[in-house]
Each structure stands twice: as structure tokens, then as C-alpha cells.
Length: 212
Image 1: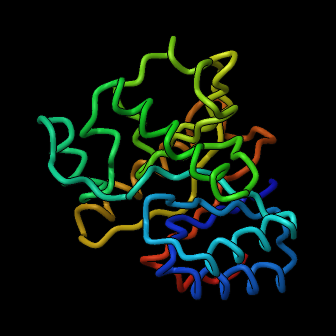
Image 2: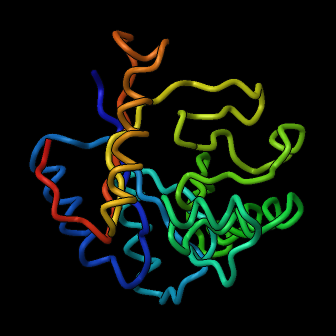
């Protein structure tokens, strides 16, 4: 089974740890790496140069929300999601469809504004896409959106199942819930025994992982 490795929460304040993880992965023979970049942070010119250098090495840059932080929790579903999974990072769940689309477009535009390759992939914080109707997907500046079930093709609307391994949990409740969800995704029909890729995620808040 092929491993697709992504490093989440790439921000100016995490670049040093990201650099170390990339080195460890490459030393262990993993070159297919995607960096999930959070555009709305305090990026400096030298940080942008580092992203450009990684891109030139063949490392994919994907868009990952805008600020990776919510100002308020909106509604019962967001509150439940925050408690069980996402804490205060699921930006999309605090927005309506127009707000989600605007955030995703602003995120894509940031790459172009800084001379970086336009991202073809978008990963919402905590994989929570929110209330974005399927009819809006083809108008987005991305080809793929990664959610917990797999990859959504924004043009066809089809889902490519992609079992997800790795999560961040700071309480026993979140760890139990996330582990159960991961097990369900790995064993559901259409994935169990299939020759599909495995998405392996590395989070900056819990970056001391054994290399695979």
C-alpha cells in the first residue's frame, strides 16, 4: 500500500520543525510529501523563500484554511465537533457557504500573490469542509479537496476513498473518538483489502512520530 504523506499546520512558527520532519522523511526514502500551508499567518520574506525552495524540490504545497483558528463556535454541530475532534481550528464550521468559498479563494490567491505555485489541493482545517454545496465545487480554484473520507474531485464531484492515518488529540475523549473514526475508515467496505493509497498525516502539535 502506497503512503501519501502530508505535514499539517505549516506556518512561520512551525517551519523549523517542518524542516526537520522533511529531512527525516527524505532520509527514510519518502519523497512524495505535501505541505499543508496556512496562509493567514505572519509570513515573512524568508519564510516565503523557504516554501519556494521546498516547492522547487518537488514537495507539493497545498492550501490549509486561512488562519487555522476560529473566533467563535457557531451552532450545536460546531460545538460538538469542537469538543470531540477539532477544538478551535475548524474554521469552515463557523461560516456559511459564501464565507467558506471566500476563505478558500483568499487562500488560493495568497500563493499567487507571493509567487508560489497555485495549489491544486485544499485541506480544510480538521478536514471539516462545512456547509459548502456540491454545486459550488467546480467554481473553486482547486482540483481536489481532502476530507476524512478521502479526496473529493471538484470537477466530477466524485470521492476517491483514501484511508487516513494520524490525528491530533489532547484529551482521552478526543483520542478515543479519533481512533474509532480512523479504524472505521480503514475497515469500511470499498477500502478493506483494496489496493488504494494510505494518507499518513503529521501534525505540528504532535510531531515526534516514528518514521515509516
